[in-house]
Each structure stands twice: as C-alpha cells, then as structure tokens.
Length: 177
Image (cartoon, rainbow, N blue to C red; front, side):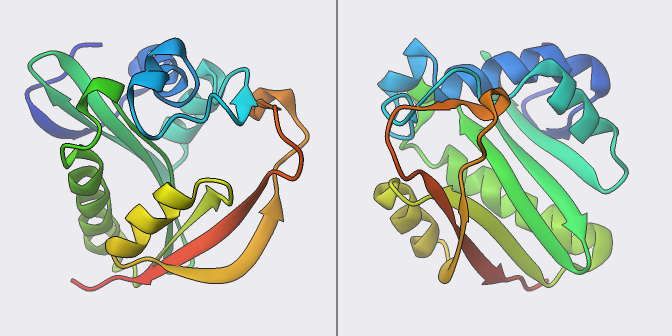
C-alpha cells in the first residue's frame, strides 16, 4: 500500500486488501504477539477480510482513517457516523509501534474528523470484556464504561473464540470541537 505521505489519510477502495492484511496481522497474526493489544489468546481466525474493508470504505456514512510513517501503514481506525454518534472500531497499530502513542494520536484524529464532518457529539466503541488493559487505556483517554454488553458474534468471519463467554462492553465519550 502506497500512502500519499507520512501522516493521516482516508483510505481508498483499492487499499482494502492491504488494510485487511494489516488489521488481521495487528489483531491476531504472529506479529500481533509483539504488541500489547493482541487478541491471539482469545480468538483465532481472521479479524476482517477484503470484502468487509472494501464495503466500509465505500459506505457514505463510513470511512477508514489511516496513518503512515516512512515504513508504510502505521495504523487504522474505522469511523461509522450515524445519528450524532461516531462508532469507532478496527483500531489497529503496527505491533512494533504499539506503546509509543500512535493509537492515542489515531483515536484523537478520528474524534476530530467525526466532529468536523458532521458535528458529531458522542463517540462509542465496543471492546472485548477480557481486554481490561485496553479498557483502561480507553478510560485514560476519556471513554467511560456504559454497562451495556453484546455477545461476540457466532460467525467465523469475525474470528473463532478460544475462550468461553466472549462479549463486548460499550464505552462512550462526549466529543467537543
């Protein structure tokens, strides 16, 4: 995947294969074990596929925000804008660069984009309940636990659970301009 320059940019449809590979490697691939956000102990299989990423990029209410450095793709986040809320997902950072502020910068940029595009006032995300260190990370960035939960989908397109009782908890944050 060739980026226009170092920094942030909105993904284009032709970048879907590279983004799908990147996200799968960051979440569940062997390389993911080098970072602190791996799901490889909880889930096997893929996190996403080219078809899903392409559809997310093509949707008018959705985008994938990417950031690059000199080595290529550094991080991604999916932004779905609907009814005054930005739903964030698929936040992935190159495992060798995790813990260096990249995820925080990418999330902050996604918040700015959501506010600037549609005046969005609230952000929401779903995080696996077993990922307490990740929930704590988001809390430090101003996200609050809602007490709302959803079971992990029984669909191998999103991964194959390695532990019982997988579910998501929703976190939210009020966004300001």
